[in-house]
Image 1 (cartoon, protein in one colour):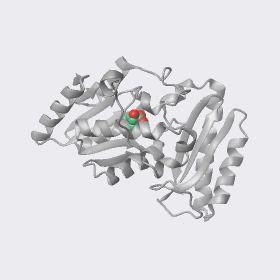
Image 2: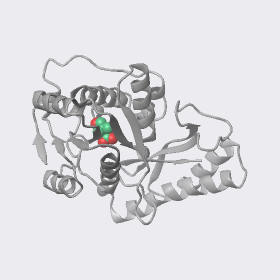
Image 3: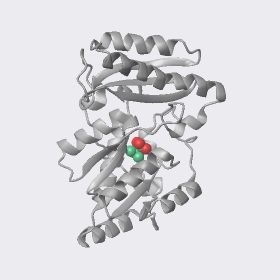
Image 4: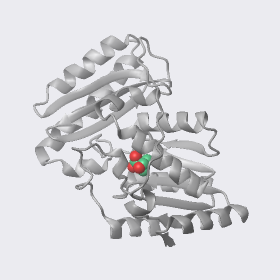
Length: 280
Ligand code: PAF
């Protein structure tokens, strides 16, 4: 396994792989790899013959009062997980290498990004799309892998790829969960034992919503009301949003369409921000 820190070297090595006829799978991450990332790496290995994992805590996607400094950085552990799971290259650039002081070109997707997390984190998706476009340009992957837990991020990136004719196919891997249902996230480790207990109500509320939908309730106002009701019973939870939306546009819908409608939740568990979703 090769570790590349230089932007130029990454571009050259990826180009050589492509000219050598290899299919490249890219798994962009901010490190602190968990089983959700490992499952994306495994899917990348199945679809492609060279797997590149990027580990870069992207400052551009954190707001001024967010957790960029505290975001867990676990390099040795990440290195081992990549090695154990057949990664060919880790791209691990510095902030200076990706965003030199005079950096001034950003990409703004304006529709899918404008709702839900785009409201509560107004600069977040601009940071995500900008860094992903840079990674796509550097690596030119045939396939790029993202997790369903970040449903809006997946939709924004798919839209950007379509709008700008970026030659990569976006693959979305299912959300990996703890045995108690909590969706895996690097931010779970900020949770205390009590906060963690309350956090399990997120997946419980989403499962209940799916149960209602499966029983024939198609009115999304009724589904949203149920999720809000269940989350509100937990002392430490403050709801940021509960939405039932189309999974491609992220626009609210009134009735449920199977495999197309998704319930999305963002909450504060005290001072820890968590998101989750379920596809109906
Ligand atoms: O999902 C993430 O970890 C990040 O948003 C991503 C896609 C690696 C961009 O920094």
